[in-house]
Length: 140
Image (cartoon, rainbow, N blue to C red; front, top):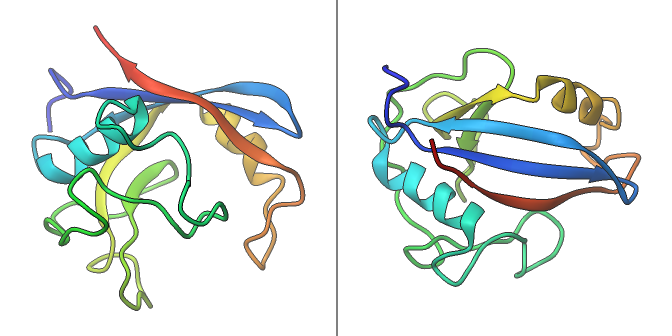
């Protein structure tokens, strides 16, 4: 998978209201173009939606640029290593591979991801307020 011409997006994150860094992601639009485009457009907000979980406000909501839901594109890419981006779906998911579409990977800012992991719990509720305070696309 060549890195050439693949879209790159970013998240600027804050912990308890304090800016904490930027994570940059490469999107695998060559393998899952529909899924990658959905995420890219949600990061930029250019389709009129995105940049927040505006439907439920708790991480479970959201919408796609194609409507509320869209079918999984394929399961070609696997969950390999830290920083893999995958798209959750509404079905039961006892395993990630074959249940969630992998569409990207962190390329910069793994130290920010390490920081965020410190606030994780077994229940999935972080011990601090974690926010994406800005997101967008990086043009080369």
